[in-house]
Amino acid sequence: MGYRNKSVTVKVPATSANLGPGFDTLGIALDIYLEVKLSLSENDKIIYHGEGQDTINQNIKNNYVYKAIQLLFEKAGEKSGVHLEINNNIPVGKGMGSSAAAIVAGLFAANELIDNSFTAEELVNLAVKLEGHADNVVPAVYGGLTTAMIYEDQVYYQKISLPEELQIIVIVPDFNLPTEKSRSVLPEQLNLTDTVNNLQRACFLLASIFNGDFTHINKAMDDMIYQPLRKQFIPGFDEVLTAAKSNGALGAALSGAGPSIIAFAGGNADGDSIGEAMKKALLEQNVTSRIYNLHPNQHGIHLQTESM
Ligand code: HSE
Image 1 (cartoon, rainbow, N blue to C red):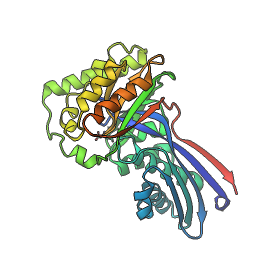
Image 2: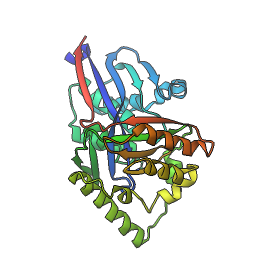
Image 3: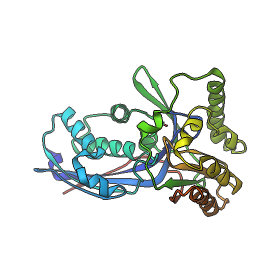
C-alpha cells in the first residue's frame, strides 16, 4: 500500500472554550500549537517534547495523540506500529484545549496517513465522543470562533472569523485544574433567570463579534452559571478579571474549565500591561503564572504529507 512510505505532519491550535456565557458551546482557536509527525513503523516509537513532557513521558502510551491513532487504526483495520513525534506548546491541564488538540491531531494524522477512510465530519464526531464536549474540538479543527451544537448525537457548527488584530491575553496559573474537578461543582439544575441571562449574553456576544462591535462584550462575557461556582478553585479570580478590564481589556472570562483566564483586547491596547496586571493579581494570592499574548488562529488544523 502506498501509504507505507509517507509521513504526515499535523499542526493543531490551542483553544479556549465557553468565553463566559457559552458553556460547552463557544470556542476560539489560538495561535499556539501542538505539532505531530506520524509514519508507519514495525514497532511503536513515540517521542514527546514540550509542555507536560515530564509527566507525559512517564506513561507515554497513555497520551491522547497515541490513543486516538490507535482508535482510528482499529476502526480502519490497520495493524501496523507507528513512529510518532510530538512537539507540544499548549499548556496541559490548564483549560487551553490540550486534550482536544491531542485527540484531533491523532485522529486526523492517522486518517491522512491511511488514505482518508473517514470524512472530516466523521472525525469531528469521533473526537467529540472521546473528548466529551464539542467546544474545544470544533475550533481546533476549523479555527476562528465557533459555536457548536449537538443534535441527536451529531455535531453541527457555525464559524465566525475574528479580527486578525484582536489580542488574546491568557494568564496560565502554575497549578492544574482537571476538567472533572471543575465540572464536579456544576449544578444539576439551573434556575430560569440565570439561564435566560446566559442565553441573552451568549447571543449578544456572538452578534457583537459578528458585527465587529465590541462595545458591550465586557457585560456579555459575564457568565451567571458556572464561573460563580468554579472561582473557588482560582484564588483571586475576580481580581484578575478586574485587573484585566481596568487595564484596557474588552472582556475576560475563565478559559474552558480553567484554571487559565482569558482576556480580549483591541489591536491598539497595551496587551503586555493587561497580562502583567492579571499576573500581579494572581501573585497577590500567592499564585504564580505565565502570560501568553496571543492572536486568533483562523484556519484550524493544518495537515501536510511527505513521501519518505
Ligand atoms: N466546556 C467545558 C467546561 C470545557 O467548561 O467544563 C471544555 O470542553
